[in-house]
Image (cartoon, rainbow, N blue to C red):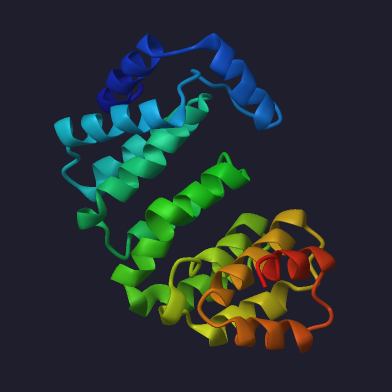
Length: 223
């Protein structure tokens, strides 16, 4: 039986659904997910109001709600769960890590995985820096491409706080991967860091000739 929390947000989503928007969104994500058809600005407005009116008290309940949301076919409920976890950062702890990993590896596609990074992962590691190396090294050595992608992208917004030793190591470990999303992540991570230290990025590419053309192109896009 679905959590009461989920039942309430579903009713709100149904009331704001748009079949035309849903059709377009479904096609955009290659028909992998169903949609209510709610544009992002409206959906986020609905979510923020809902989160404030219905605070979650503990981590166990939060986990239950999130997993119920991910079990639903509509993509907006997956987004709802991701942003719900981000909103409740005050109850994050080290036991949030298995939940993050579960979210990254379920209903996975670039949109949900990258959103989890934006709302949760990148901020989580700033809050719990002692967990960075042990967690992200495990992700980087995983056979799951989405966890590998997150090991490369979690520092995307860190700028001068970027650990270039880890960034280098994780890219080197994945540079021969043929998966598009891994190659794109490598380029994206390097491009982001180039705004902080362009010389470092140019030199890194110079001494890593095995990087794919896609990764190089993405990395040097604004150089």
